[in-house]
Every structure is written in structure tokens, then in C-alpha cells.
Image 1 (cartoon, helix red, strand yellow):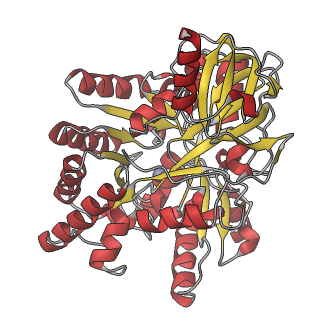
Image 2 (cartoon, rainbow, N blue to C red):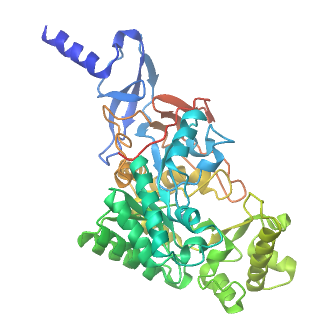
Image 3 (cartoon, protein in one colour):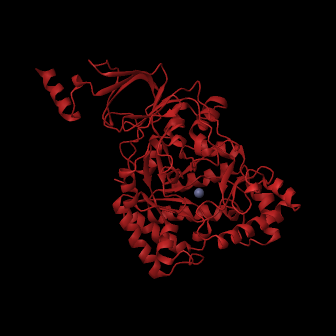
Length: 504
Ligand SMILES: [Zn+2]
């Protein structure tokens, strides 16, 4: 009688009958649950979009059974800083994210965002094979309040209060908080006070702050001080996006930088970071001019000696002269019979005139992959216990768009061990969910959403490169989003179960 009663209670709670063949048992797996604890052998039962049971489980009559052949079963990976959303219209099956085990992307980064209403309706009407959560972008608020041609100045107090209202509204609707892209021109001229006031609004709504900080090179120290101050004065969690040291003379100072972040944490500032596993970034040419003097030869010289290696930095897009695409800055300089510094100045001028002449051009006018970091710092940042993994990637271009998560597992777990596999997965799942304040994802436990990855650590490897940014990874055997299989046999299944994830 007792057992019948508890069976009834279970049936009532989970809302289905085991006898009706609606559940799936994933068995013969080593479970990495996303909390950082050691992997353990077991089975996971999924029903609908939920994990309903975990442990030493027997298949029920008629239940679908998937045998994991002793591979790892992990929570679906959460990409803490993604630019994949814009390609979902053309590629809703999202191979870029699924092939590396990502089941949730966090967008609205670097100060640019879509409204929560538009994302919500997009995800319910058009559908995609990835979940989406978003921050609200400072630059987007500036554009809406100040006008797109008015951004190279600080906002007035009236403008700031309009932005504050819009931001508060968005967070109430489900945005995770405020994102900034302070290194980029349309936000660079904002005052620290403007950013602080907006951050306070986000904090009042129990939101969070994530930032592509004001400098990743020459004035990195000031930029780090700024985000620490925001964390201190607002009391809300703050996260440095794609943490890096991009100034050559500062390479190998990551230990000191992490020490500073650690010290801030000791003083009560909830500061964290996300990081990607590459020594080159992908951005605009103008970020190479911290002074914003785009015609200054000394500044251009600083750019090609301290801020990037021209022989390793590749033009990805260059609309004015498509023939330059795929070539390094040094190669383009050679073609043009100039020094790399002179070429940099010319390319920026050409891109600016192209924009003026083609105001409706919608693609990327110029992007460059800048070789700018050292592996030692990247390793230190990845190893920091408070960092999580992000791709900062999109569909093509920089290989991070297809290979980030599998690269971390191959390079830093298999090849040159830096992290235990459980720790690496924690930085892709449970810890990320904590940083975002996302509930019921990122951990394998009953009641959590069934976003899952079947991972073959023997085979896992990224293959995306600068030359072939869309090469698929090995080792991601199967991906589930909300209980539906989205990736199998190295291709999408066609299921599009992604949802919009709102702040709770
Ligand atoms: Zn960024």
C-alpha cells in the first residue's frame, strides 16, 4: 500500500505514467552533473523536457533506452557570451553551437541587444535548435534615446533617465541585466557616471552587469578598476567579458590581474569573467586605436607592434576590397607596398568611405582577427576558478564560433591537462548558470530541464581553423535540448526545441 501510494505521488508530481512509454532512459553513462563533483556511473531518465530521475535506474516497460557506451553525459553547455543569434534565421538548426555541445547562448553582449519582446516572439514563432537568454545593451539604449549619429559624446542626464526607464522595463520582462561594449566607439564616449547610473538601475531590478570593458590593452588597468567599482557600488554580480591581455608589453601579467580580481572578491565584490581559448580576437580595425586617432602614424605603429601581430592577423571581411579577405595585415601591406602601420590607416579610411557611400550596406564592412594574446595568459584565465567558458563567436569567421567548447576539452583537458574534465564541464554549465542567475539548467538533477550532451572524451577535438571556420568538432555524440535530440551523427536532427530563457 505504501509503495503504491508513493508511486501515485511520483506519478502525480511528474505528470506522466511510466507504463505509457513516454520516457527515455539514457543509461551506461558516466554522469558529469555540472556541479564540479567527480563523474559517477549511472542513468538519467528524461520525460518531456525534464530530467525526472538520476541514479542506478532500471528501464521501465516500453521505455526508450539509449546506451551511452560508458561515455560522459553532461548538462548542455551554456555559452556565456555569444554572437550566434543573427545566423539563426538562416541556420535555425544551429550546427555552429550544437557541434560543440552548446544548448544555450547568452546574447545581447558588448552593448548590443534585441528587445525581450522581439526575442520572445522570435523564439516562439520561428524556432531554433538552441536556447537564448539575453542582456540589454547599453549601446542599443544609447541608439534609441540619443540617435545613431549622436553617440560620440556622453549622454545628458535627461537621456540617462530615459535609458534607465527602458532598461528597468527590459529587465522586468526577462533580460538578465545590463551589458556594455565600452571599447567600441558608440559607447566609448559615455561617461563612467552614465554607466554607473545605468548599472544601479540594473542592480535595483536584481539584474547583473556584463562588460566588454573600456580597454583590453593600453588602459586595461583603468577598465578593470571601472568594473570593480561598479560591482562595489551596486552590489550586483559583474562579469568581465572575454577576459584577455591584448597589450604585448603586458603579456604574462595575468597572475597579477587575477590577484586583483581575487582581492576585490575578498572585499565583497562579486566579480567573475568569461574567456575563450584562443590567442586571437575578432573585431573591428578601430579597436586597434585606443586613442581614436585613426590617421596617426605613431598610433598605427603602436597598433601593429603592441596590439596585434600583423603577420598573424587576418582580415575576415573587407567590403571595399574583397580581395583582401583572408590575407594577413602584413600580406595586404606588401600588396600595397606600404608598412603595416600605413596600411592600417588606409584600410580604416577606405572602410569609412565605403560606409558613407553605402549607407544601407547591411553586412560587415571590416572585421579582423587580431593575433594579440599569449597562451600563458589564456591558460591562467581558463584555470581561474571564477571564469566560465564563452565562445564570443558566430556562424563562421573566427574558429571560436564552431570550436570553442570542444577546444577547451581537447587542449586543456586531454592534450595538456590544465583542468579535470569535471571542472571544465562545470565552467561550461553549472557555474555559468550561477553567474547568469538561470534556474533549472546547467546541472543534471531531477527537476532540471533536459539539456544534455553525450560526450566522447576519447574523440573530442575542435577542427575549426582560421582557414575553415565552420569545420565540425569530433566527440559531441548527441545533444538534447529540452529533452529533444538536436544533434546526432555529426549533424542536426531537424528538431527546433530552443526557447527564450527569461531572468527569474
Ligand atoms: Zn566583446
